[in-house]
Image (cartoon, rainbow, N blue to C red; front, side, top):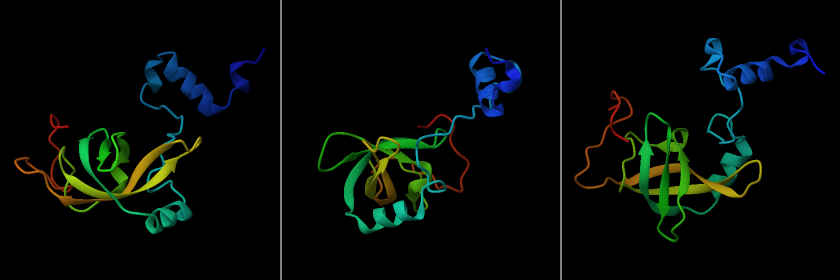
Length: 140
């Protein structure tokens, strides 16, 4: 049987978080499987740039959570979008028309993620905010 000394530090921290230890309640160290622009390899980004460009509409996007979903024009299944992959000066809102490229999300490479997302037409009648503005904490 292993003792607490034998557990690697990150696993011990994760166990403390899972067990509800108040001292580490906000330090969950399991890495996210979502490849952000910072963690994606250069080759993944370059392959995506060379791939086809798709069109769709933003179904939802939460600035505070840092992600949302796009409904492609050519199908019904939503595609995940991370905040680090949005280009331009405006925060996406539901109904905005966008163009994007697609990569597969590791490790199984079964789910897709929109990258190089650009808003091409702002949804009419929706109040849009710029990235450099203070976020509206109630809007999603």
